[in-house]
Image 1 (cartoon, rainbow, N blue to C red):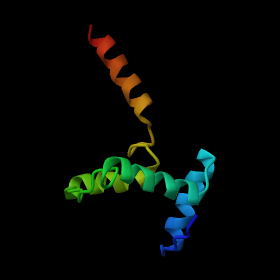
Image 2 (cartoon, rainbow, N blue to C red):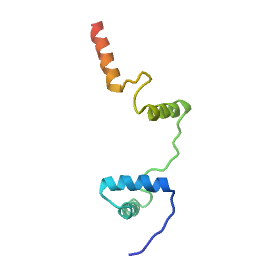
Image 3 (tube, helix red, strand yellow):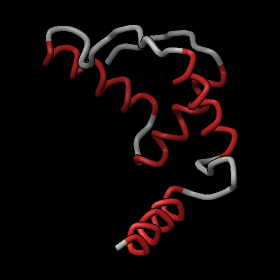
Image 4 (cartoon, one colour):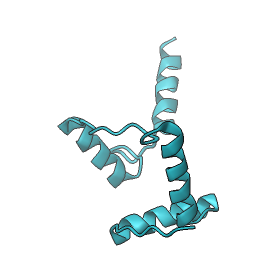
Length: 92
């Protein structure tokens, strides 16, 4: 066995550790999985690209995060869909 040391910011480490804990693996397990996958793929085991979001999409993401999935009127998607379905039934 050998040791690898690397640096990351505290928030990244904390968030990743919480995910790995839910999966029942350690940080070392996750890093080893990544290294094995890199070997198997003969490169990075995922696509690397810069996402290109426009201002409208970024604003929608921010709104979703702030409202925790509720729209401007405090309704969730299921409530809105139920209202739309009821409106359609009224038209028939």
